[in-house]
Every structure is written in structure tokens, then in C-alpha cells.
Amino acid sequence: MHNRDKYPEIWAAKEAAEAELAPLLAERKVHTDAMADVQVSIAKLKGKKEALNGEAMKDFNRISELRETIARMAKAMGAKTASGQ
Amino acid sequence: MPSPVKFQDFVEQLGLEQHQLNTDTLKMALTNTLPVNTQTVFDAVTNHAAPAAANGYTAGGEDVANIWSESGGTATLNGTDITITATAGGIGPFQYIVLYNDTNPSDMLVVYYDHGSTVNLADGESFVIDILTNIFTLV
Image (tube, rainbow over all chains, first blue to last red):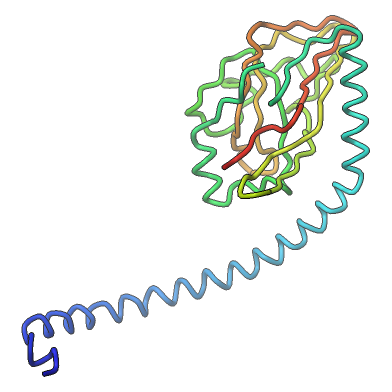
């Protein structure tokens, strides 16, 4: 026996809930689609930022080495220090 | 130096895309005002009153040249050592170091450190923020 016939009251209530839900989801989808479009624009800007970061970090290893060297020299001259983990 | 103290808002903002820990510029700023871990944004005037931007100290603090990476499920924020050397006139007093996101339009906070005692730098003296292994990890 079909559930519609086996549980008519539950079935009807379920169909009523689904009928109310459908337009709410449709309305929500308009906004989530628009959000997805915005995300595409954000992704393009993020790509541009990533490229700039690549340029900004191209000398990272040397910057790190030089900063370690300067820190070591400063400590050798009695610098006060705050160490990380 | 003790472990970093997390600003509570940081973990929320991490999930709200306010921090890009690999491409945003994080800065360490000095202050002599005890930060409060419920604060949300960097404030060099009142909440994190800064030493004068002079005599070797740069307004807004120093860029840590941060890098964000992941291995085995653990993310690591790393950066480079920072040495601040005072010129004539000196720098200070300060006791705390605030790490904040300078790229974020609101300068949202990340963590702070308590050096444990007040520091004053005279002409020629330096203060080294030694990153050692990393700034922090996220498991």
C-alpha cells in the first residue's frame, strides 16, 4: 500500500509543508545565486591579490635570513628579547 | 616570553573570511597598555596606545612577512624576526606586542604577547621579537 493511503494525515501534512517550503527555497535561491555571482567577482580579486603576494614574497627567504642575522647581532649587543614559540 | 594570548574574536573572524593569513599583511605593534582578549580591532590611540612613531619605531608596528601553511592537518603561521633599534630619544615604555591584520580594513586583532616587564630602549639599544619556530599553530 502506498504511504499516501497508509498514512493519509501524515502524508497530507508532509505535502502541505513541502508546498510551503518550495517557494521559500525558490526565493532563497535568487539570493544564493546572486551571492555566487559576487563570489566569482571576489575570486577574481583574490587571484589578483595572490599574484601580488607572490611578488611581495619572492625575496622572503632572504628577508628572513637578514632579519635573523640582524636579530642575532642585536642580541649579541645585549638586546632585550621576546621569543616566539 | 609567554605564549601568545588569542583575541577571542579572531577565531570567529577566521571563519567569516576576515583573515587571509597567507596574503594579508600582519603587523606586530608595541604598546604599554594591557590588551584585553575581548577586543576586536587594533587601536593605536587608546586600547593599544603606541610609543611615539619616532626614534626608530614605525607607526603601526612592523610587518612580520607572514606565511600560512599546513602539514598533517596542522596549520602554521610563521613570520620573520623583528629587531627594533632606538635612535636618539629612545623608544618606550612598552610591555606588550599586539599582532593584528593590517590588510583587514578594520585592522582586526589576532594575538598579543606580554613581555612580562616594561621596556625602555635608549639610543642604540634594540628589542628583538624572535619568532623561533612559529607564531602559532592551528590544529
